[in-house]
Amino acid sequence: MSIYLPANELTDGELEQLIKKANKAYRSGQPIMDDSLYDHEYLAEFRRRYPDHKLFHRVEVEPFFSEQKVKHLTPMLSTDKAYSFEDMERFFLRVKKAADKIAFNHNAITVRVTAKLDGLAASFNKGVLATRGNGDSGTNVTHVFDLGVQHVGGDTGLGELVLTSEYFSTHLKDVFTHPRNFMVGLVGADSLNQHAKAALLAGAAKFVPYTALKNWQGTISELMAGLDEICASVKDCGFPTDGAVIDILNREIQLEMGSTNHHHCYQIAKKDLGERIQTKIEDIFWQTGRTGRVTPVFRVTPVFISGATISRVTGHHAGNILKDNIATGDCIEISRAGEVIPKYERKVSGVGAVLVPMDCPSCDSLLEWENDFLVCYESNCPAQLQASLEHFFKILGNVDLLGPKSIEKIIASGVNTLEGIYQLEQGELEIMSFGPKQSENIIKELKRSRTEAVEDYRFLAAFGLNRLGLGDSRRLLKHIPLEQLPTMTVAMMSAINGFGEVTAEAVVRQLAHKWPTIKFLMDQGFTLEKTLLDGERVIMESVLTGKKVVFTGKMHQSRRAMQEQALALGCEIPASISQSTDYLVCGENVGASKIARANDFAVKVVSESDWESLIDKSKE
Image (cartoon, rainbow, N blue to C red; front, side, top):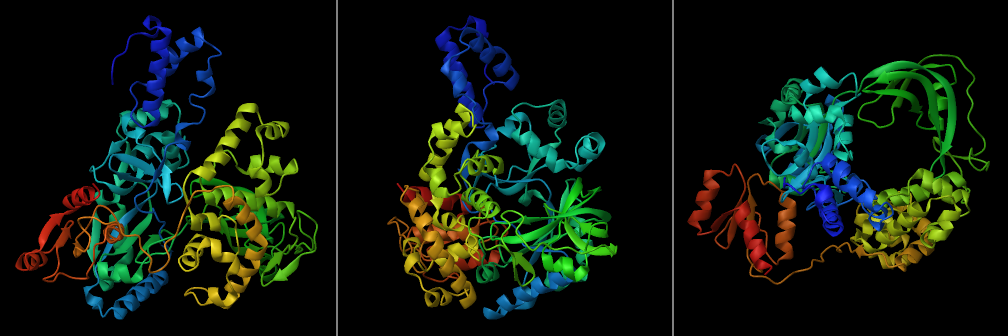
């Protein structure tokens, strides 16, 4: 880092410019001075000279961890989960069915097993480290490398910010419940505490790309014959893990199985069975959710399980209460296998009186049964309005400061719709007891949500239509544009693969109710990235237009993303090399026979980095 004159030797102008420069560098992940030096010398000196300067009303208003959003090159998807041998058998049955569709030999299917790290998911590309965020964009946290976080292997791509298991068990297990909690705190901290400084000094905090981990590769039958032992061997990596990730490596099968909006269908995580423990139900209370379903929550005698002290457990639904005859005072068994909210597993003992509500706990409306669920159908139910607004801003993913407490305060003041929220003015928020600065920032966030680009399917999913989450919203908009949804019929929607008549009827009915709000927000000038219709593709004329390109080997970035990029530039993507192929783009571990075949056909063989250079040149 650079050396600067002491604060008391700088002029007012020089000091102000240095503060601005240091703050900008810090927020870009490349600080030019230590936090302590910035806070306690330069910023303190400027505050001493000008305590009411406007700088103190706009510098560092938000913590770094909530700013600097980064659009991922390809979505960071979650991983589907398996907890048992039977789950794995079902997964491989789907793999074999996909192989049969393309006449691929089952014995030639290659499986890779890698540890599933239990840390803070992140992606490193072109010098920028970003958290998962909402999957499409995350937070720029490149600054952690300057703090002292080590980059294991230096590879790009997906990985996790983790703390070594040995360091945690030796120095921090009595201070933090889980090493993941420590890493989240370290990454988001405005200043480092003694534990963070010590861990960084010891080199225990690391970003570990998954490509840097040891792995096992073999056939399906070999893996299933030694599933537990193989998973255990890769998990012995020196970092916290909560299972193993199983990938199908054959590109042909990957393309056949594809991906949902949530996960790659050719990949699954074999999760460790969560710890189970018994506890006593002290009380049962009921809560009304966004869709009107009224579900039970157990308040239990606090127990420590899977790194957390638990006092509340979801009871699933009212049907569960009646089936298992659950009542206050019962002893139950709970688990926490990768779940944020622990769940009820079974009743152990108890003979209390079973009670289920007849009226909504939020609005007192009469409840109705819908299969195993009790449902409130009152459209103005406060709990449903609160949950719907929370859901909108959570799924939209580009609005800070409007969490549950803020929304609760706004609703209590009489504003309970999205239309009302987007028409709020700063003075109205101040009347609602928000501070002047907080009110100003909320208005700025609402404006940002309209101007910052967001996918149209995410925008649609944010309205919380039952049976229309992110994945189904994207599927729907691939066939019917957002602006045409008011004219969509049940027959039109049910004709789309993946939607049945029951789902179509529910969505069309809800759309009629929700469309005025959707249309209102669209008219507010939201910047929506349009989902391409099936068969529609934007082609940019380039020097690569018309070229036939084959991708092979292990790539640092998503193969699917590279193919999509090539298609957008007008390339053709044949399945195999032929005399008409122009380029063979090679990653790692490419067989010699494939290279030889390319040479026989005079195909130009290029590396992944060479291909990226060609892409860049084609855009000039």
